[in-house]
Length: 267
Image 1 (cartoon, rainbow, N blue to C red):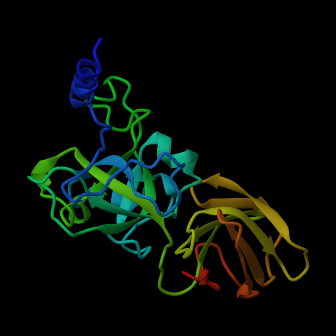
Image 2: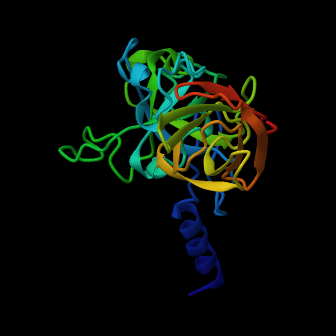
């Protein structure tokens, strides 16, 4: 083969060899990085919404926060699919979401910040791509329609989004809602700034040392201990390894059903 002919063959091969593809949105964000995503990197998911005045807002969902309006979370909340929910350990974490890839329905330049308060259960009667939005391996957010409409037109339905984990910003201190009966003590930990998701809780009376509490469900923690007629202190640790200690949060004459406010993580 002559040098001229060889050169021509090489040029033709280069012409018809496909270039590496880059997945981009109309905002020109891309996912070409091969390194593991850090906490601040945007990741792909999908989102749907539920109607206003849905009963799930009154019962507080799988994280156990109770009435979300009264608890201070309002409509800035989300239910997560099984692969994201981590069996409730993610409750209280905060995510930023933005509409992605669909110029017909996205509201450009907008994003929302939501706190995880609920679980979107899988529906194995449907395929993940055919109605089972929250089935593994789907990464899915279910939002109140009020939150959804801040980033997309409601007609979008099952909307492509991008999400990233961010620090939670909360007003006031960590809230401790004490419930139970006799020596069974339950504490709902809410309004947590910083990482937001609590991984360990200790409680202390004036006549005890620090006692570890167990996770009951969501962000409800419990212990069997006689702590009546003692001021209560709490030690709260979040998923980033930081700990905040709130001394004598509840006075000596505390009662079940009361909520007390302690110190707060930096946000």
